Amino acid sequence: MFFNHTASKSTINFTNDHALSDDTTDIHFIGRKSTLEKLNQPKSIINEMGLATQTPSDMFDAMISRLSSGANGGGSSCSTFLPMTDKFANFHLISLPETVSRHNHHMSPHVITDMLISKVSTKKPGKVKLYVAGVEPGDVAPVAAAIARAFPLYNSKTSSDNDMDDNDDLSIDVCFLTETCDKFSNENMFMLQLASAEAVTKGVRLAAKLGDMTPAELTTDAYADQCKHIAKELGECVTYEEIVGEDLDKLQYGGLYGVGKAAECPPRLVIMTYTPPSSGTSSEACESVALCGKGVVYDTGGLSIKPKTGMCGMKHDMGGSAGVLGGFCAAVELKVPKKVTLLLGIVENAIGPLAFRNDDIL
Figure 1 (tube, rainbow, N blue to C red):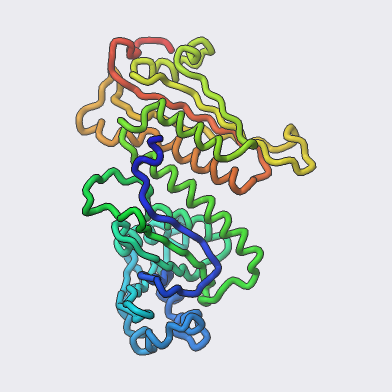
Figure 2: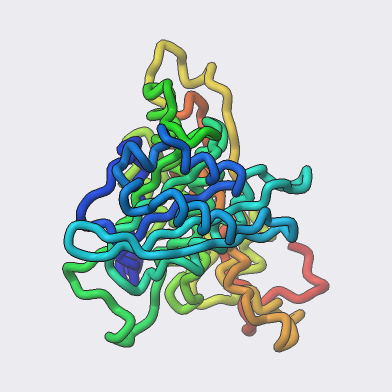
């Protein structure tokens, strides 16, 4: 199946185990500068991990002093090498903006993504440990999404110079620390937050992969096949159905049919429904939520053809459908107590004799 054709060999794991393994290649501490300064306290997590001997207080202070407070809305970093058992590991401090606008999340997820992209190479195997400091329980999911965006699954490069060997892998372990750079005290509650992080990460990476795929790979047929595969993996609590091609016209889905009828692969409406496991409440009494996504796998504009500068990038016109598909998968994995219905209008707006005219009534 195309889904496995170009998978990037990187895994993201969320854990409450803060210990470093001997094969760790990269160590990253991420947080606001005022938070990272607390790592140099006598009872900090760095001392518990045994890193104090590798990072003397004066060296750590020097690294902290090189960080900015992010007054321009961006991040900053300082790096060195730490001696491990039989090698050196890269050690990075990454600071986030101290203040953000009221429209932004206080953990600056966009900065986390940008800094990780610049600091972690996805072309080399290794074991990366990320510590995100200054996190409140409600911050776990958005921070997880920011980390997921930095490690895309899709890779269509064919050069052997850029490919890892079959036995190589890039593993990213993520730990969260409080504002005082401590572990979370309520471990049971925090483990639920880690489960949310895992589900959100899978959903974000799935959506990004679909958005990155070329139109030649992600046809309407291939997209539907992927949805079928996902529904099967999610289990019996998810049902799958689709309305394809001429059946859309017969059932009076004129807009969807009209836009997609000129393409080589037929348009379709994909419907996936999640019913929560029985918990003493009938499915009829469950609150219902509908997720609807626009899935135009490529939009030429049809007979209202787009100019050359406006057509490039139109493979992303299916981004809405990919986003809600990822959200649907996360909801199912978390077993939300709601009935969730996913509706994806999957079409290609192509040019041809069957393309609808601007004066048609659909």
